[in-house]
Image (tube, rainbow, N blue to C red; front, side):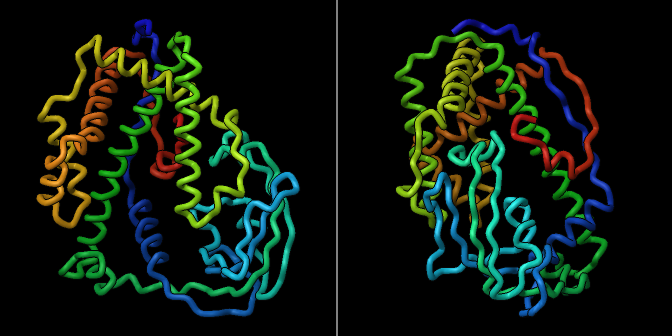
Length: 322
């Protein structure tokens, strides 16, 4: 693995401010999440909860069928595929519709990338949301014991600022890793690429099963994963070389800080920290992430940097390679 001249690496550092409108939008989002619903007979629209039956076909073969079960979701949810929801909008109870969706080349999961999938939808029911009032009770439900709306706004703003910090670091890390792959010159052994492809296929199958799908119904092809597998294998080798040559391994204190960060997501942080240290193998992930942080900091201190101001929405919508 040849050394990379990190001074040739170029990244964009983002700067984002949290404004009052961002706080209001977050409160509105929380309110929507706490909505109650009532059945309506009108045509569906964005924000409604719908209950549907669905079949989908790829290259003439059925790849999904809800059968006797229904799928329930909120139309327009950020996690959903917009092209599908746009086709469902306007359907009333018991109405059916057939339509095609053209998936982009960079779509995940990869087996649908650059493919046309045919859908058949039957609307079972439509429920409209009833939003809660933004009052003292609402504030208390978010953990503000006093019920003070101003305090609630302040705490939400602080939470958004924390999220901005996390997103900015993640965007910088993605750019640096992409640049490392771009500037590397490695002849990858076929066996290494094959191992990575198999790992990705197994992970994809497991994810489909966890989501209630049947991975056996999907014809996985190794070439679907080859490009990403090569990038991942290359990055792993380059990172190992950079860490080794520049002594960027995480220190015990850095690993400890990363473990504390992980533990903060648990109900009992102290118990979680103890759990990590009961088995040294459990420290492998926090140690790897802490080491990656060292790599990012080291490269950032030497590479070419440009600044760019983004709104909160723009930062949140950054593409994985942004």
